[in-house]
Amino acid sequence: MSDSTYHSGHALSHDSHGHHGRDHDGHGIHQEGHDHGGHRAPDRHTHGGHAAKVTWWMAASATLHCLTGCAIGEVLGMVVGTALGWGNAPTVILSVALAFLFGYALTLLSLRRAGVGWREAVRLALAADTLSILVMEIVDNGVMVALPGAMDAELTSGLFWSALALALLLAFLVTTPVNKWIIGRGGGHAVVHAYHR
Image: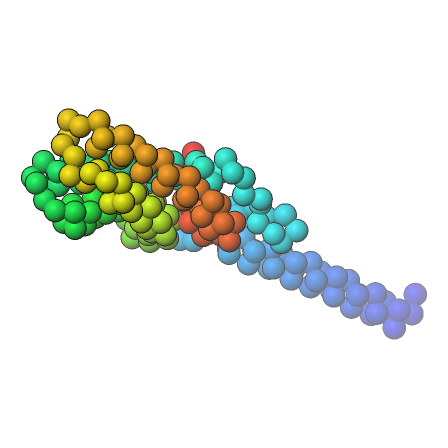
């Protein structure tokens, strides 16, 4: 074997090893991108660069999760406002405030159980629930105010509870397609879906 042939082969071998090393370096960088401070971020599954298809069941589940917290706050606000004889405006303000409070609280609770830190949990809860709760409260309180006598009905009145049940049902029906659209764009409950077990 001539010296030139030997050196050429040796150089090619070094190039091959260098390429292999770069592959490993690239692989290391790829792994690093999914690891934040020792805590592995939830995987985002995509197919061909597109997010997984959002089903109506997923949207309804996210809306129901949101509705649970909203309903607790809404009912509590309406009950307190009605019991104290408040007017429509302060009762609605209290109901909306409590709906946001309990809506965020339920999401925060599930995120904390998943081991998410407080700051990140608050950020995720705000991103996941704000628009959904806002739409729900507009529909819910709009129905209560629009129905004749609903806001002035006594707590023992069937009108009060039937109107509130109808308002929550309509809020669910309106918010579900909104949530489907938001989740499909990677927002809303899409940002916390990976943390739900």
